[in-house]
Each structure stands twice: as C-alpha cells, then as structure tokens.
Length: 76
Image 1 (cartoon, rainbow, N blue to C red):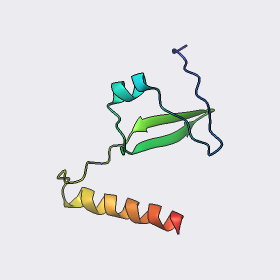
Image 2 (cartoon, rainbow, N blue to C red):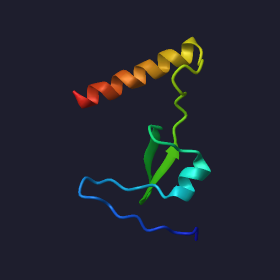
Image 3 (cartoon, helix red, strand yellow):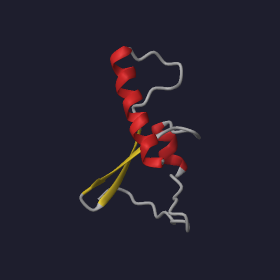
C-alpha cells in the first residue's frame, strides 16, 4: 500500500496538498489541478492546461476555449 498522508477537510470542503507532493508535481499557487473519481478514491493530478502565453496551436486553442466556456456556463 502506498504511503498515506492524512488531510483535514475545512468547513468549506478544502484540503491542503502536502508540500512534498506539490514539490514532486511542481504545483504552485494559481496552477490548475484536475480531480476525478477512481472507484472509491479522489485522484488529483496536475492539469495539462498550458500556461498563459504558451503556444498550443489552433486546434488545441479551440478545444481549450470550448472547455473554458463549458466551465463558465456551470458557474452562471
């Protein structure tokens, strides 16, 4: 079984990613993290979303623009 870390959930449902994991994944403040369910687990991974200004090509730009618009609609 992998090494475990216990994380406390705040009243807002937030948890802090331990520093050793942030360092391994090179996750910094403002980065986007993907979360998904895998059976009875929540899996977090660093997003493949490019940094602002990073060239991605027209096809990837359109794909990302569509994803951003879908997320915006969820918040409206």
